Length: 320
Ligand SMILES: NC(=O)C1=CN([C@@H]2O[C@H](COP(=O)(O)OP(=O)(O)OC[C@H]3O[C@@H](n4cnc5c(N)ncnc54)[C@H](OP(=O)(O)O)[C@@H]3O)[C@@H](O)[C@H]2O)C=CC1
Ligand SMILES: O=C(CO)COP(=O)(O)O
Image (cartoon, rainbow, N blue to C red; front, side, top):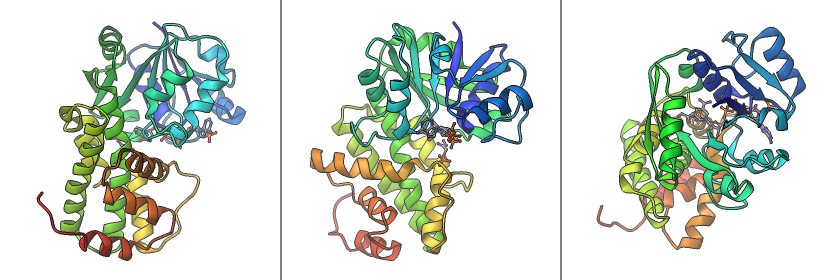
């Protein structure tokens, strides 16, 4: 079954490259004609500029043409997913739509598989998520990810189709758990970056990671996810990576907040809008997610990092 990627950013291009090494010819849809020309003529993607692409990776601005592939990897930012799917006019009956984005949609308050199910009910939704930097995948470094699909037969087929020599996929049917882990870890990574940027130290970061994980599992349990999914690659695994590495844009965004520096607005930082969506979800479900709430306020510049930390430290003492 053929594979195509919607979105010519760092992650979509890295996945295309990884699959091309297994002999797949991969087509990429990009909205920008200059990006398409760069991929087809210079064999470079502007958002992954240091890596040369093989001839077997080609690009087009014609989304309906690219979207004919049996497996479509959806690698646009979370808040652009619905609009990108809406651009595809032809029905996607029985096609496997694999979300590669991390977040919660601000309009629908669902993760990417919910958005896919709503926008393209005739397709099979899945999500590929877990600890991986695009650059590592592009350089063929060892990586392990979670492939979640409620349809287990389709999930098995995708696991085999998308695994490569360096990219090892584990499988689950728990799409809610997989997508919430990937979405929420970005919010906690912003908190951890802000903590280090403010000079509060590694002990405080460990506390934020642990209590942040408690918030992740609390929300996930309320939405019917399995606890073991949150404890796996898509949850704890990605939390560990993103909260400790300066390669993460979410972590670096937090660092800039803590240091009072300006951050490059052209970079994709999923945790900001996810924090807002999660705040709304928490209010709707009547659950307490104080770290996520503080990230939302600090990201919106309503509260300073120092005030947010003071608030978290002064909450009533309770059992762990
Ligand atoms: N980079 C990474 O290491 C990883 C990223 N991810 C996830 O992958 C997703 C994409 O991230 P990444 O590839 O890094 O992001 P990039 O910023 O590198 O690229 C984003 C891509 O989406 C396109 N895009 C942006 N806005 C829109 C829009 N409104 N409509 C259509 N296309 C749009 C961009 O086009 P243009 O260039 O024209 O702006 C670009 O092709 C995110 O959810 C991220 O969390 C997951 C794992 C690892
Ligand atoms: O999701 C990622 C790592 O798993 C990439 O993190 P950033 O989006 O913070 O760069």
